[in-house]
Image (cartoon, rainbow, N blue to C red; front, side):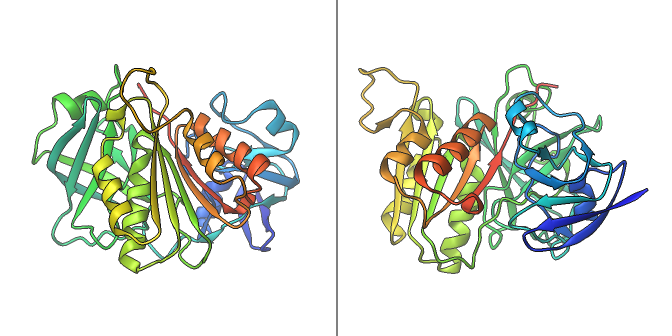
Length: 338
């Protein structure tokens, strides 16, 4: 049985069967709804069902609260239609202009930039051209069928190598191998590009970039892409970490601030004591942003980090700083140990 799914406010429609997630059905119809992990964990695809009946599907605790459910919210990557539906979905784009591919690649280099962060560079076959948008990610395909998602840190114009920033997950099934077993010239496979966390190139509003830890990776792609295009919108980057070494490319961010017109960089640490010598900002990174931007009504915010950070930023920037809901672009990530 097939149901008709309508999107508001733009009026686009697509069919969905009872065994398809709403996101999969939209992608099959060539429509790109906002999404991230596709696993019911990150909350990036959260949206409101305005009318109709549906099942929530299997989701991770914390990705959808009881208050969200009561308000008619759903995770589109898991929800399945049980009738015709009307969904509230903004920033919808066509998904069929850049193809998703499964490709082999070879490990080109491994550079440990912090105790728990590795920069992995992958080289594609010479015969392949891999197109993507700044901010998107790929899934590395493991031999046992599992996947690991990592944002692409380089810009689309500089895609001879794919750059990934990988944080070590103690006890994990993949990242310890990256740190202790992976070697240059190893062969991997991946699928991509994936995700809808991309720069709105046509807006003219100032941009605020917010990230925690390795959430810096897609932000790096977006900044370098904007620089390549000659975008002159004011940008402010807020990068949060617990310790100073968590700002593993701090020198690069400072170079941007010195060389890109109207670009500011504000590092924020949350885990240090008063006598550690840190002279910069302290506390939660999104609270530092709010202190500097009490009125975000004429801005766009691009945020990447852990789900708790993203949800706090979404609620606080909208509720306390007047950021329009459609001006908050987010990519939240989770770490798998299985």
